[in-house]
Image (cartoon, rainbow, N blue to C red; front, side, top):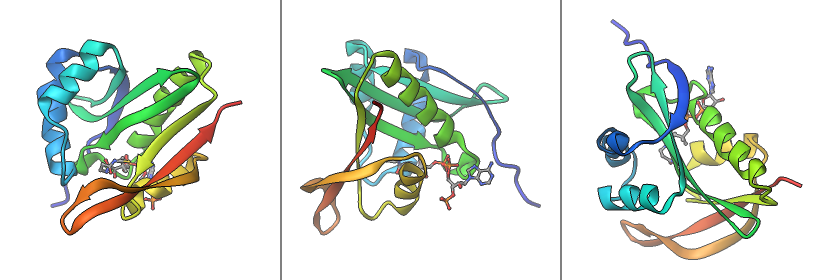
Length: 155
Ligand SMILES: CC(C)(COP(=O)(O)OP(=O)(O)OC[C@H]1O[C@@H](n2cnc3c(N)ncnc32)[C@H](O)[C@@H]1OP(=O)(O)O)[C@@H](O)C(=O)NCCC(=O)NCCS
């Protein structure tokens, strides 16, 4: 019997009570997940944060963005494994980019691991271009991994 993927219903602002569900997805999605404290600090300092929800109001993805001095920075973008491949990340990116435009940011920046092929395809499809490499940016099992710095120009 095949299991139906969870269907995206909407994207809304992340609330404090969403953090446990967000953390569950974070922990199964990353080798080096953010702690609960990082998410709570992001909400406390007022970074923009969204969750994608399904028909049952369950969190199936989330995204966080900071905007400062004309630049928006994607801090985190993640979709639950059983909801991937159905455009949820696209919808979250739309929210991020819309916010960056509303705040008149000139560009959106993000870091991605070179090994993260699905994320790199997503960002390329959405118009991001590589502008630099940050050597040894990420922890990795065999030492450190570089980050690719990608940018989407908004003006
Ligand atoms: C990277 C990530 C956010 C992508 O999320 P996603 O919701 O699966 O992304 P999308 O559905 O928009 O796109 C994924 C694939 O589904 C395809 N797709 C999108 N909508 C679709 C639809 N309606 N029907 C069929 N396929 C679809 C896309 O074309 C894409 O295919 P590709 O990977 O072959 O290019 C997700 O894999 C993830 O959370 N990974 C772990 C965390 C992570 O690495 N985050 C990024 C850190 S920089």
